Amino acid sequence: MKQKLNTVLCAFLLLCSTAFGSGFQINEHGARAMAMGGAFTAAALDPSILYFNNAGITQMSGFKLMMGSTLIAPSSTFRGISPKVNETKMESQLFTPIHFYATYQITDELYAGLGFNNPFGLGTKWPSAWDGRFVSLEIAVETFNLNPVIAYKISDNLSVGVGLQYAFGNVLINKDVKIPSAYLGETIANVDMKGDATSAMGFTAGLMYKADCNLNFGVNYRSEVQFDFTGTAASTGGSALAASSLPNGDITATLTTPQQLVVGVSYQYNDKLLLSTDFQWVGWSSYDTLRVDFTSSKTSTSAPRMYENNYAMRFGANYQYSDDLDLSAGLLYDKNPVKDQFVDATLPDADRLGFSIGAGYKVMDNLSVDVSYLFLRMFERTITNSMVSSVTYDPQIKEPFNGTYNSTANLFSLSLSYNL
Image (cartoon, rainbow, N blue to C red):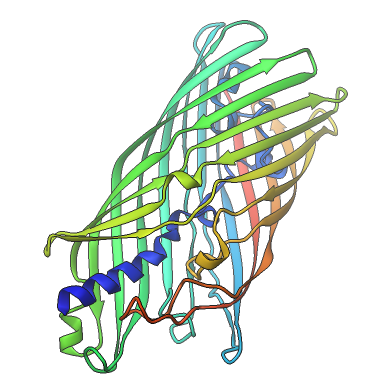
């Protein structure tokens, strides 16, 4: 019975494996790029092009540095369906992913660069007594990505680039578990899972083609990155008998971030106005199962990840108002990869629409500052066919966690650029 219960509970815990869903994917890696809705793959306007298209660093002459951060303030509410119609607001949190880029022109044709940022992150935290505490109380994800790149200018019109992704990160999952009298007597326990991953590897590749003096095409590819997490599972509360049957001890798990392909076009409409657009494809469907191994018991369990490939469309404009001041605006639409029946409160995902604005100012000849703001509105999502159950003791008994999610996010970004 103990092994059966432990396996069932752990399998349910794995429903929190949406930690690497699109809601946790961060696409804001530079203030000017964010101001343009992220439509930056064919717009090499500053060193952040290293992330958006590493071939574009061939348009960065000399030695350039860029660093900054984005402040992300998400908000979400959940309203249950009759008879549980309570509305719960997610607790306020702030996240500050960073970005750093350095580009260097080695020769007229050869360029090198180094980037460091947080491509996945964020989290959610719900009140301790809310209706969904058996689905999720808290989840936090943080990843770091070091990205050395090299690019070669084949001709004045064509450049290619390749890069290495070296990543590491950590994850925390916390929730309550309910065990009814049919097994061990009515009891509620809390389960906390923490893990760290090092030495995750991947690669990037890019292409930039200048069709004429006004029209640019860009292509960027980012490979999957596999994170091998090691950590612990700890259970507290409940009866002593229940505690002996809950997950405890060392664990290992593998989580994979998806491959991405982005195609972009930019057009210099006149000497002041640049227009750009990106189409981003994300291959979420390639990762369909999450497996967790328990070291002490030498057992393992797995859960399906029912994701679909998704896409995003981005549109941006940059206007050179004067020699020292430029203005930007953007629009984006991002389709989520999670089917209705698998949406849960870890970070409730939905299709989203974003509007952004920003400005850049040249403080002196070699120093400039960019600021931007992005508002994200997730479409209201009502779930009536949930396969996420708050019953954790028997896979045959379903208590669907249906309801309506409403989410928004406000993002503020600051970048400093320095030319040596």
